[in-house]
Length: 109
Length: 117
Image (tube, rainbow over the protein chains, first blue to last red):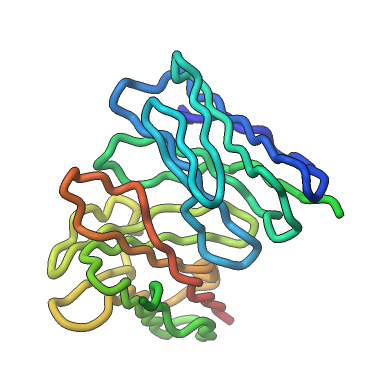
């Protein structure tokens, strides 16, 4: 059983905010939400993670719903270099990362 | 601070030969993970190591594959008697020792691409 559900693909116009949704309806209280991305032919890159509160860093913002059953990764001003596969991963703090199929985000010029 | 270094970046082997992939973690990192990505597929966990210890090898194929992370030097993923199905990108990741035990923030290398002829 997959812990997360993400759309297969999304497009976003360059310069606009990219909002990537993730459903994790069976998340437990101690599980974190992690986001990674993989730009073509490169190694995965950590973006952000959170437990309950919304988080922001230099790359993105993570909005977690109050019931924690879903979250949204926001790239505030998407550029062509943000074209990648984005992975939403739910894990306990001491578990290994398990990658699903992710969302293929394409930034349109 | 150099990132995770993997070499070789590209490796070509004939069936039956051995492949050795090396990974130097980021400075100060004592945890190493290996993942495999078959063409057009997702990343699959293989093994998790700390210095001189294999912590979790649940993703390693039962035969021909082995991994080590010695006290000195890089981590090595070794594939003996390679077959065409071993052709893939192999990614190494490292993380620091975490006081909270949180192991979710990994730093990945650029990968080693193995082609078996």
